[in-house]
Amino acid sequence: MLNQIKGLHHVTSMARDANENNAFFTHTLGLRRVKKTVNFDEPSVYHLYYGDEAGTPGSVMTYFPFPNITRGKPGTGEVGSTVFSVPKGSLDFWQQRLAAQGVGNIERDESFGENRLRLRGPDGDGFALVEVSDDKRPAWLAGGVAEDDAIRGFHSASLRLRDGGATEELLKFMGYQDVDTSNGIKRLAIPGGNGADFIDIETLPDVGRADLGAGSVHHIAFAVDNREKQLEVRKALLDTGYQVTPVIDRDYFWAIYFRTPGGVLFEVATNEPGFNTDEDTAHLGQALQLPRQHAHLRSRLETLLPKIED
Ligand code: ZN
Image 1 (cartoon, rainbow, N blue to C red):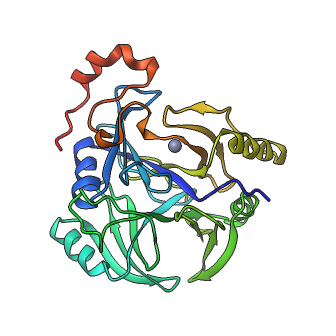
Image 2: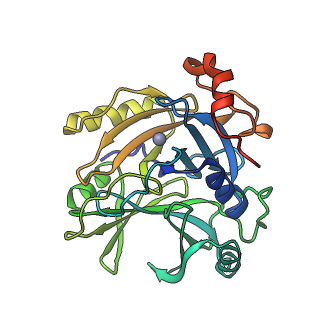
């Protein structure tokens, strides 16, 4: 069993409209946009990152806004919901705030003994806020949400799978442990994690496969401290029979990817070097940052990409 993984690093999803996406995460949820860059493979599409002040691993939600793509079809083989941690007693505030801003499908319930508020993002994305009483992670407070209410980072991601068994086995190999089962949903946790510690597995044998589109999660990334730990994880996965990509330089972290038995794409990403490699922490996310290989496209991309209204 591995011990290098420290919880979630980031979650990456698809959207239709960069401005709608930016407004939802910065104005509605009060996160900081920590990077405005482009998709490595499709530089005419933004890659937007939202998180805490520094974009600490475990807090980072990222999006590819592909203009006019169709919505995803929910189903199995995907992440069902991405869950953020908020302070105890803050869900009344959030319920009112989200309703006032026209956010859809707001529902309060309890899950694993925690107060939860479920909501839908602009493209139908599945999100939830869960009250956590002892989350020590600092909040980003310039986003207009007070410290008593502000998001601390991810709490968990839930996977919807036709057959959860093999993915559960993989997560345990990656260092996750059984915590609990509630309403047929299995919760695993990483010991000594960064706060974004839980993965929930929902097994839905009769539900068809999801189609990727706007509102769908493209992949989830797990955090390791550095490149050395990443190579240890990569070797262990390869030795177990997983097909893992070579290490890819994503400018703000190094990444490896592999497809899991249940169909969800997993990434393992390093905590180094972080988001202040090309702009200082005080100005993260403001200017368009381009990967080196696309730097020569700057003037064209600045014309082509929609202007984001902050
Ligand atoms: Zn990623």
